Image 1 (cartoon, rainbow over the protein chains, first blue to last red):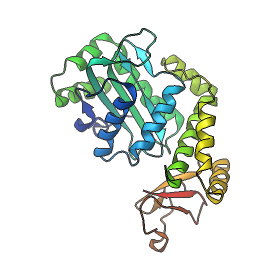
Image 2 (image 1 turned 90 degrees about the horizontal axis):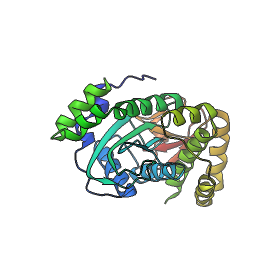
Image 3 (image 1 turned 180 degrees about the vertical axis):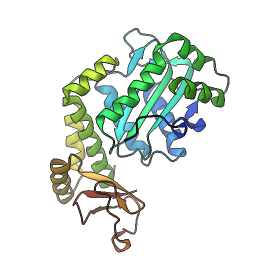
Length: 155
Length: 112
């Protein structure tokens, strides 16, 4: 399985510049609905359920206002990294108690190996760890600008 | 949730459980700050799913899961995503979301 992120993985349609909701589950629903609209998810309700179950096994907030929810699911048609931004912040049970402002949703199909899935997750985490990278994503004015920044950061 | 969706959820739950029990995977996740803690949440969800699935499908699911590591696979462009054989048009179900068996590998097929 390829582990590099080709440009289609960071589709412009998959950057959400301002989330409408502020709670974890509706946020996941909103992002998954976007992925469904882009044709990369076949059963959105199933994927949301899987992501919520994963959250119950341990919060995916990694601190510094970032969360990386992730799932390997039969509901996923194509692997994707979706990034969503919340200006107001989302309560995500982070260890540092900071509300989450950047959500990196990593989804891969069930046929992907666990190692490949984790490589994708690691790329997203790596992109989110440095303050200057987070700042660039938070400051991007539009969805297109955000995607361009993300493409550069994850290259 | 209908029977097909319950079976798909069972598949996802089993992938999660495998991830949880894999020490190397857990070490990787801990390094990333994404540790998972064992919980009976998965087992409860699994029981709920199994209650709404016909025993025939459960039998085929468990059998394929033990043999291949995945009990149900999606069909894309008439190709089984488990063994990659092209399925005959005569085996295509009338409705989307239907379950059938792959004639080659016997995995449960989900026609998306």
